[in-house]
Length: 419
Ligand code: NDP
Image (cartoon, rainbow, N blue to C red):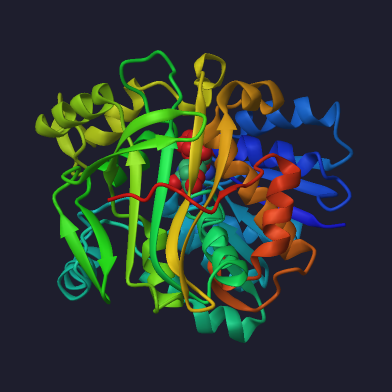
């Protein structure tokens, strides 16, 4: 029995909320709070017909700590699930600390305004010292570690698929398959087709910022940064087939490198079709991916926000997306003194997801782990106070929950390695 406050009611939150409401014995009371309350009301009304969970809704601006504190102290949840945007991570963490409530999210902090001089100073210093230039990094949220420890609270960071399940796969490989891991390649393949020439599968602004940033990987204790999309490989994915994939910077590389310092190389690859890349390059070249406001006909607009308004809402892609995703990790390392390789991954079908929860597989593969992460905290399976990423916890109960709630693992002990 628990009370949970979910912040956000977009594509990912929709799946997570539906999954929580299918497990009313744990998620007995739930409040959906977001910027646009009408979306929360529509979902709540639908779910009340089938779920035993007692569902309430509220309007909240999660950029305002005061509004959050008011809502959290009135509702008194056991856990706040932040499934809004990464821009709100810090205000929601602050509010959770003030109200003494556990916290979780699906993506690490990045600022909405990348021209903010205070943030920019710290960011530029980090770029120089650390050697990668993505806007997002863990330092902002790791800085809350002591505060959460002292308060006896948990903040679980990045409980989606990647980050999220990929880190559980790392912990699982370390626990069950290897004495030491030498290399990790995280492969994220979306073989789905939504029929649009260009659309993003999750929040367009966050997605385009991520994939247009320079790529980077971890090797021998430091970052190696490369121009965006300049390392390309082909891989034959189980149940999807041959795809082009590109090396990207990704947040879990940073936490895995910290928590498993033995690993010599960690890379992240994501598949992209040619049409997506051509559109993205063109939009970037004309300045449409910029986060810096410009004046247009007497009004200030942020180009990437304007672009977001033009693109299809990721939540609307469900009925038209066909095909499968395949996301997982390939490891090399040693067991009992012998070299060994191992691949653990999940294959998810867009149309099956749509039939189950009215969503495409990208929101599904993020929303289910968000629900499973919440389940770990609410049932006390993960209970160490502090600020944590998923590879720090016992992976077994989480991977069992993923199996049960729709994201079963597949394994290969003889995978083709990425060159
Ligand atoms: P959406 O844009 O579909 O949904 C975001 C939701 O947050 C909307 O309901 C939006 O409200 C709400 N919101 C935005 N700003 C505020 C605010 N200031 N106050 C209150 N509510 C707000 O995004 P997605 O569902 O696609 O993504 C959700 C999160 O999941 C993102 O952080 C994304 O980075 C992460 N993600 C993680 C992945 C992983 O594998 N770890 C993969 C994919 C996504 P409104 O309806 O008014 O716009």
